[in-house]
Length: 249
Image 1: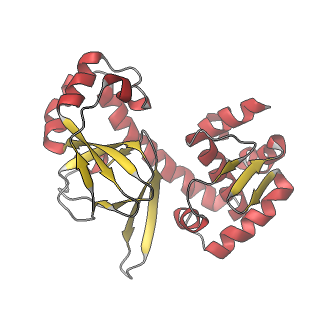
Image 2: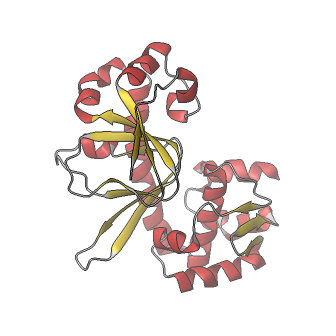
Image 3: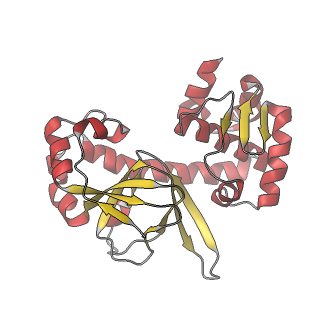
């Protein structure tokens, strides 16, 4: 069962999220006074597809999967979101009044819940937060475009390696040794490939500087992995993961 705690947020807690890195104290106070925190156990539904889109969410802690079923009833993974990411802002600002995806927790998670009508009426009150919220929609569109380009120009093993690099940086993990934050099955689903194809790709990566043993990943040769993946990617020079990971060498 979902545990709901009407916990008072603080400006210091908000400042741990990139979304609030440069917001004013007045902006933070507005959010604090008009939101609450919901706590979820793993495998709980935050909202279902076709529910009325009453709220949007900001992840304080945890990992959330965004998915929906196709006409055959097969679950299609859209995104896996982590601390600082925004859920459903694009949906509450669209014409359709319902959620277009289902959001489900992967781990214990805490989310800031904000009323959709309230934020729509107060977007002009936020000088710094509002552009970042709309920027989250642009980021999603850019990721979709990238994945389309990669699927047509890169091998499956290169796409898997790219995902591991992004995962490492997004979760602030040590590239020289870290544990996957969620299962290989879930990761394969996110990349829209079979578990068998995913496993074959992992075995292949050792030759290109990435060693995977069970759920443990280490970049044993970052330069070799760059030549295999990033040099083949159409947007690598503008990629945050590329810039951070390859600063180690």
